[in-house]
Amino acid sequence: MDVLDLARLQFAVTGSLHFLFVVLTLGLAPLVAIMHTRYARTGNALDERMTRFWGQIYVTNYALGIVTGIVMEFQFGLSWSGLSHYAGDVFGAPLALETLIAFFLESTFLGLWIFGWHRLPKWLHLATIWLVTITAYASAFWIMVANSFLQHPAGSVRDGDVLRLDDFSALLTNPSLSMALPHVLSAGLTVGGFVVMGASAYHLFRKTPDQELFSRSLRMGIWTAFVGSMLVVGFGFAQFGPVTSVQPDKFVDKPVAAMALSLMILLGHLLQLAALALVVVVKWAPRWRGLHPLIVLLTPLPFLAAVLGWIAREEGRQPWMIWDRLKVADALTPGLTSGEITFSFIGFVGVLSLLAVADYVLIVRIIRRGPHEIALGERPAPEPVLTY
Image 1: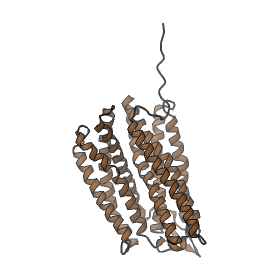
Image 2 (image 1 turned 30 degrees about the horizontal axis):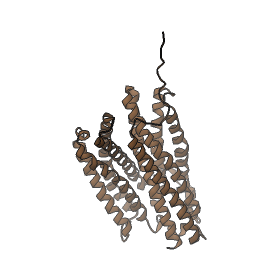
Image 3 (image 1 turned 60 degrees about the vertical axis):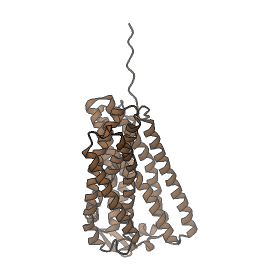
Image 4 (image 1 turned 120 degrees about the horizontal axis):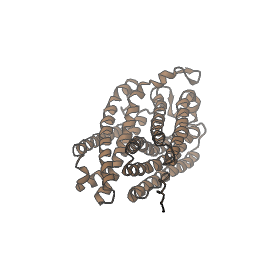
């Protein structure tokens, strides 16, 4: 493989690995916030344990996902400095805002939520997890603004050999963003719903303690997966209009993009049908043990569909880095050698692969351990013992 193909493969692999963390974060954040809202209203110990159990999984995925995001940023300077030179004035703005939101605001609010248990006032503590959710979605918004600029360079004008930001509002109302953003957010909900379903079905099948907790979680996961799968398929097909109006040959003579798109559509409809079938029997699903192994087997499929969708979106834009403005070959860092990119490929892919393995090993361990051992935040102080 030449230098360009190695650099493209490196970004494709690291981007796909990072996206696995992102979709789970986007899916679990609102679910944990809803659970916490129910606990804040009822004060029920079961609602608290349910919130802390799923919150622990969210925190684990978020913490390791942040590190993978940092690795992704390095590649723009190392491998794709031509993009930074040509369009840094436009492309850099949404990335900078995403960094401020994700690495600062979201992390700050999450820290307050983790260490605020039974320390912060009840409603202030609840507000922190909703702020985590809002900033997570805002982070996704700015990333999709940057990516949509690559698909359709709206709001920019040529100034010599570079692009300049001409209309910030046009950047935010990019036609390539309008349907892509809700498609990604609903993909996150689908992933979150199926993960909650799968983990709950595992415990219900094994008849472990906390059957009521996992019965509630299973029903919540089913409804989330149902809503998410319906939205992700709907917004997925709705994208074809805005996308093909700018890139009419996006999937023409591009076998990798076409194959990824076909498999994603197939998986999307499969998940949609599965969620529809489960929502019909949602009332009885916790008691049907024969159904639980099938639910567990479905859990990886929305992750695969999400990665396939991302590959189709990016591969279909080739050979352009910025559509009709900058080719991928011209965005490559000048003077980059095959040895240098091979070294960075091994380093980046190795680090992200280890983080992905560590993430899912830790999540599986947390799920298997169950909610009776939760290391998240401050536990309630013991009741004072009165002596007379």
